[in-house]
Image 1 (spheres, one colour):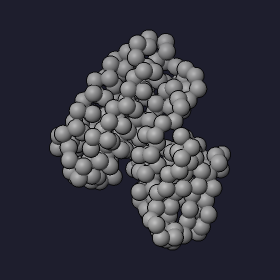
Image 2: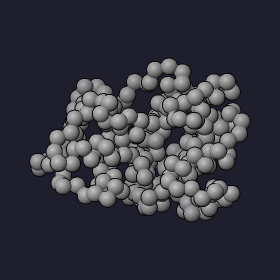
Image 3: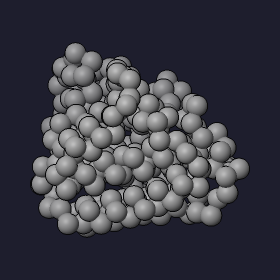
Length: 250
């Protein structure tokens, strides 16, 4: 757990370096998320950080019931997240402070877990290590969402290894969510930020291979770009489906 919790802490620190000390005018800048300000993104992260702490503490269901109180019936997870932000939106500075508190609490909560502990999350139970990876991944996605309000995207780091691995591990889930099954094994052959190679997949010959940069793969899996607008290339019977459906979240 030390490695992935360390990556989570580092990713939270990167976001903290961007938003620490911002005033309301900057917190109200539009983020990369349609319709959300920087403060809204921080509020969403705070809410889901708190949800993760509740999961570790065995009170996930109670947290969800409390969060959903007063919300109209909503369809997708994205709809629910948007409704929760709208429900709790307040002073931008409070969203920043709440995120800072929740980020620290989340990392501390995960530190006490064993990698194989089963924790409840949106799509069901996950191993603790997988949930930490999911939280680090979401924090990375939203770090970029926030950073582009102030300048260029931050340079990619080797933390993307965890994001890419999560996307690869969840390919069967992503396809099943769309009513599909993979024809055979899927592999990712990716260029790491430092120019080295990352391989995800069994040593035996896969039927579908996705190649390109780790940044492109992770950006597509985070649903911040379409594969056709990147340098990703897929070969094999499931290539189109994987590139269209790959994801890092429920």
